[in-house]
Length: 186
Image (cartoon, rainbow, N blue to C red; front, side, top):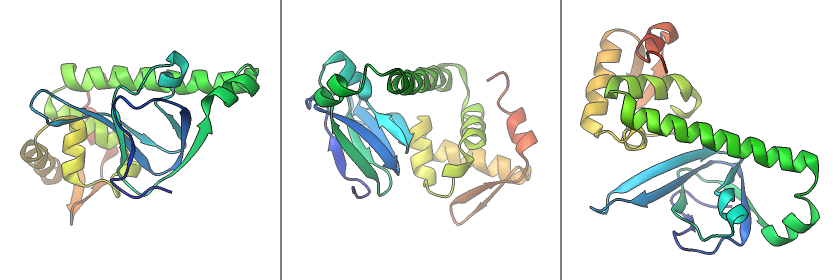
């Protein structure tokens, strides 16, 4: 069991274990040249965390902490590789996990290169409706790499158009079709 904000590993730590996030939200992040936190990925359990470090036998390239209380199973990777990884069903599970991460990377690039702030927000809200009750608005802005002020202004526009409801910091989608129309081709 891990508590919210607890660290699972730091950039540079050795990747001895396969980390299976059973429940909760884990955050992979680094810092830019101004020492601002840059979120690379938020994972919702069940999911593997940074398993490519095990496959490549390299140290972690980012930090990992928790956005919520979480449960993680630590699996000795060397033993796991020797006894299980060559089995087709288990290998397919790993392939699927990596495929999800490749899709996430594509979305990350789209978010940060191709989309304007309203498109980013609409896409995130539409695709992550189940997280809206657990994440604070400041955290969503951080995930989207936009300022909290910009996020707030755009939410006000969506609320004014009765696409969302925003009560006490909790966002609820009222009109999925209108929200989706902001996303464009993504």
